[in-house]
Length: 244
Image (tube, rainbow, N blue to C red; front, side, top):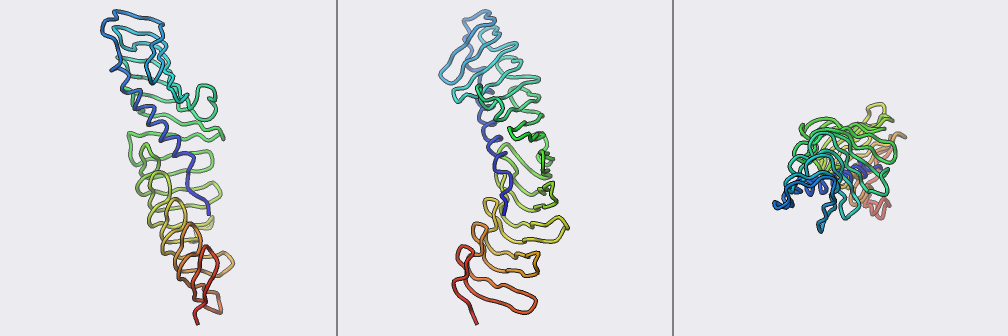
């Protein structure tokens, strides 16, 4: 059982931390400076290199954070405005990067580019929109922590998940379907895995209805085939007791 987008969540979480720091950069300006251009401005959390006016970051510049992330673009009164680029690490730019439009230090639109070749289009101005990756698409509600709320996640191989999400992972009630549209699993999810009460339908013709935990049969349940019904108790996918 696959999980739903664990890698992208980290992108959103890291980006939100860096952008929060960027948004506050204007507070660090030294009012005694009349005009500083192309100078390096060092604080305990980041280094700014670029144009400054009246002690604030104004003009083209680059911010390097202690964790290795880097933000570059045009600043107005200490906050990034217009087109900018946020890198995951100054030495490993290919890990991920965000290219898009900023307004007062906040992302308005753009796309994340991941090391595996995926491109994730992102528009936080619309809480219900689309995230489009290299081999998948998500339509529904999301925020800076990833998919949160209800939505539909479709893979390029035809599999799809429809239901609840929390911080980018399937969570709550949902339905997992196969390429033909037939139901593979319907029931509870937690951390992107089958969890709680649900029903699993095997392509070979049998089904399981009962309790799941961490994606496996766990607890009371029953297996139904075309000719028999087996009731029992399971633990981590293994039947430990059979009821007559």
